[in-house]
Amino acid sequence: MNKKTNKNDESNNKNKKWKFGVAYIVAVFGLIMLFNYGRSALYTKQITYDEFITLLDNKQIQEVSITRDKISIEPKKDTSYGNKVLYTANIGDKDLVQNLKASGVKFSGPLASNPLLLEILISWIGPLLFLLLIGRLMFGKIDKKMGGGVMSFGKNTAKLYAEDQTGLTFKDVAGQEEAKESLKEIVDFLHQPQKYTQIGAKLPKGALLVGPPGTGKTLLAKAVAGEAHVPFFSLSGSDFVEMFVGMGAARVRDLFKQAEEKAPCIIFIDEIDAIGKSRDNTMSSNDEREQTLNQLLSEMDGFDATKGVVILGATNRPEILDKALLRPGRFDRRVIVDRPDLKGREDILKVHSRDVKMGGEVDLTSIAKATPGAVGADLANMVNEAALRAVKQGRNEVIQEDLEEAVEVIIAGKEKRDRIMSDKEKRIVSFHEVGHALVAALLKNTDPVHKITIVPRTMGSLGYTLQLPDEEKYLVSKEEMMDQITVMLGGRAAEEVEFKSISTGASNDIERATQTARNMVTMYGMTEEFDMMALESMSSRYLDGRPVQNCSAKTAARIDEVTLEIIKECHKRAINILNDNRALLTKISERLLEKETLLGEEFMSIVREDKDALEENTNTVLQ
Ligand code: ADP
Ligand code: MG
Ligand code: ZN
Image 1 (cartoon, protein in one colour):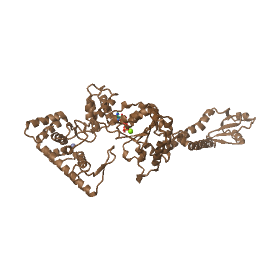
Image 2 (cartoon, rainbow, N blue to C red; image 1 turned 135 degrees about the vertical axis):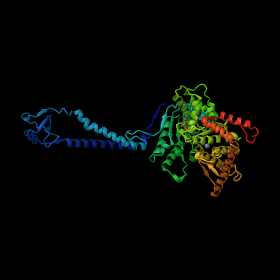
Image 3 (cartoon, rainbow, N blue to C red; image 1 turned 90 degrees about the horizontal axis):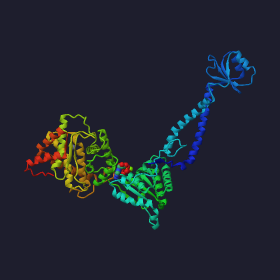
Image 4 (cartoon, rainbow, N blue to C red; image 1 turned 120 degrees about the vertical axis):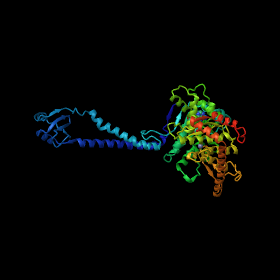
């Protein structure tokens, strides 16, 4: 990829820079003169010819060098002149040589110890370099803020990239078939604009890629440029934020100018929400951002769409964008780039395994199943983690185990086998985890247990139980949610049942259970009390948005009560299940203590064995 940074603000700053430059040069020369004057005042002194003769007569002179118009005199060390070099005019004294001989002074032509070249080096080039260095440091800083080069000392740090060829195609983007489909038209348009203009069809000037971070928005934009074989100009919205007033607008203007010269091409504005925030939000009004936005709006209106410049924007907060940006003629198309589904995840894993040596028995489908909710960036990261693990273990290909471990590292952090836990603590953790697993196994509407482990991980867990769905689910029923909460509370319940005491180990379970219960009340309309009333709404749903409450304080208090009722009910259920199956709980916990990790099948076979022996126990349902 040939990336080159453009100096884009040159023309706007030319005048200013000129003045700066001239002032700078004058200052530099002034300083050097001053430096040389100071140096000569320190080390040399002019004397009159008669003073010279007196010194000569007193035999106070060490050495003399004579040029056509000047005599340099080096006095003896013990005179009042010390180390200074004296000089006087050469008045053409015919007796000079005679006198010098008489007082025994060494004399010669120009001083050999200080040749011309060295003189120039010391008095001009040295200081010049020094001042340039200082200038670089000083102006470099200003430069960064202004975004233009002052005398091109500083580096232009603006992140405007122009790539002639991105080298990426739609093949590099997996699991975003709908998004690709809607972008194909843009590719076609860039290929042959005349096909569209002939009929008089106007093409969308811009499309907005919307989705959570890491789903491949930037990648898609580059792929569009790559597919169409056109240059790719990109700029990140956040680059505008810290600039001087007026610079953002100037940069937008410049960007469009450059792009139009290179048309057909793609302009990509990443994180467009940084400039495109709605303007009516007067709480934090920001002149600079508004100017930049206005400039962007007018440029989008102004440029000739038939030329083949297409603007792509990317954001994960579409709801805060200014309406003016979204109206027809601007970013009128919205391309959703959402989290990939099962098939999508598998495809993404495939794309990223192309460059990695995979062992024959690697099963990417099962890895895709194990990673619901993961985005493309996560999956790319997982493949890389797996490859790193393979290298670490001295293998030359990635095996299934590497991938599985990589998934767990992303979910729960790295294993921390060196953490030493007391036997008592280990026992508590073991019962806690089996508590979760057993409740999950004995309830009907839950995902199967995939793995139980009490190996601590770096992200703070002392052990965990991994449940994985058989298939991708998009809807969750009320019964399933209740069972989920019961499973989350099963860990603590096991501690109560076995040890009659409780520990801090359940804090994360409690947090998640409470959130699920609260969502049932406030967002999903699953309680009789509030029926189908919306009590909370989600803000910024593509990020991990916080719910915003929209009800009275009185209702809020009541919501808390209803949530608590749900939690209490589930807690009681978990305790009952575990009390009914205490022997089984103990048996599996002992086994886990001994082996540290139990896989789903092993776990289920113990549960089944036990249930077959107790055929009459028909209340609980096995899956
Ligand atoms: P976004 O801009 O949406 O935050 P990026 O496009 O920067 O995400 O994606 C980051 C990286 O994750 C990409 O460079 C790529 O390696 C990987 N990636 C993300 N989504 C996909 C995808 N759909 N297919 C293949 N790789 C992906
Ligand atoms: Mg991005
Ligand atoms: Zn737990």
